[in-house]
Amino acid sequence: DAGVIQSPRHEVTEMGQEVTLRCKPISGHDYLFWYRQTMMRGLELLIYFNNNVPIDDSGMPEDRFSAKMPNASFSTLKIQPSEPRDSAVYFCASGSTTSTDTQYFGPGTRLTVL
Amino acid sequence: GQNIDQPTEMTATEGAIVQINCTYQTSGFNGLFWYQQHAGEAPTFLSYNVLDGLEEKGRFSSFLSRSKGYSYLLLKELQMKDSASYLCAVFFAGNNRKLIWGLGTSLAVNP
Image (cartoon, rainbow over all chains, first blue to last red; front, side):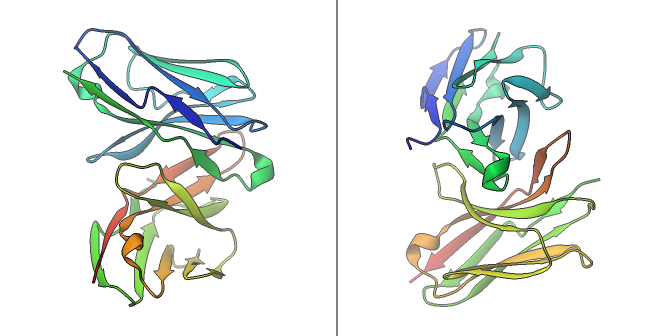
């Protein structure tokens, strides 16, 4: 199995630009999670999906953030417009109740907003 | 609240044993996870405790005490490659399934 795949691995953009992060979960997993990690705040859950349906988006910081999961093998996290304080590592993770709820993380996208 | 507390940093010597503690102020959770995260990499699963007691897996063991509100990760025969951040997370199942994460403990293993 290829594991969770994320792209791009690194993104450098200017303030005000739109950023789209992509994730392909592990095949067969029915949960997908988007996290943001910073030194100050650690891992923060932004949103998660179950069977492609958003269940809890209370962690999405502002309306500038949106996430979609059009099918079981693809999800996007979009920031529009981006701001310097959005600079962080964004992780996608997938999981399944049949795997004791363990979450498997992708390699992350390191976002820098100038 | 659901605070998860871990020491920020720890240092140990190669070949030694180290215990990383995690205390939490929450209840009604399903289990507690430990993850390892090397610098610049993603967190990877180490252990999951549902019941009180010690779970041993090779050089790593994890302990949970619900009544005392704490867990620990025990690393034996430390190796240089064990230098990493160790994250504790409390898991809630049900309709709103989520992990509540600690900030992690950065472990440095010295020769």
